[in-house]
Image 1 (cartoon, rainbow, N blue to C red):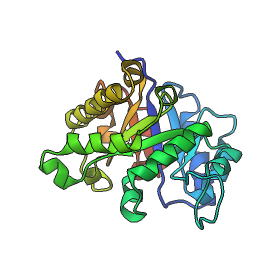
Image 2: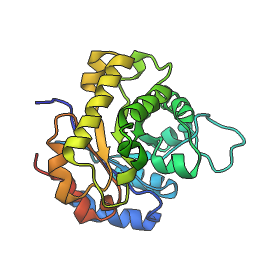
Image 3: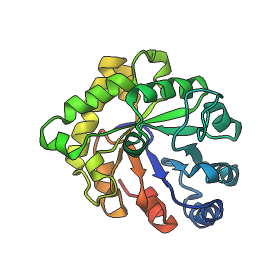
Length: 253
């Protein structure tokens, strides 16, 4: 039985104004106030992040950003720096999400710089990995995952890798309603864990928490969370409704 504490995280993407975010939390927090089995993290929009952090003070929940730049300041319109995130109390940051790779042309070389900056600022990076449908159909999932990890984790010392969380999100399952079967998801998680041992060492690989994301909902959360290498869930659309997200948090496994 794994001793890794599971993480249930909600990625709100480009949804919820500050008012809507607070309305969500007012409904959600009473449902999870005594839930300490898992870590709960919310990734709201940039405009809502400070409001969410302030509302979560005194609770056991955490809040993070959906992305960030790797520099602390500069002429980068529209960007947010790591020290800006820590100044408002953010604890986590999503990096390399497939939608950032698709719509913002973000590369894993960029992600590598961001991971290093997050670690330097005591932010917990949540590194997102995942293959396209054509890659899976062609049998290239392992190759794609290993290449993504190789670029994202390049030149990161083992002593700095302990705080990295990884989220496996097959691109073909994000927002499509298609979920990787628990067995398929666990197989890829095992690949990721093996690669972590190769890049760093066995201790880091054994302790690393690897989340699954991709059309997660209350109906499939238990089957996913009972897999030996799945250490939590990164939830998209189902995290936007407080009752639905609370059901996922309280999944029996």
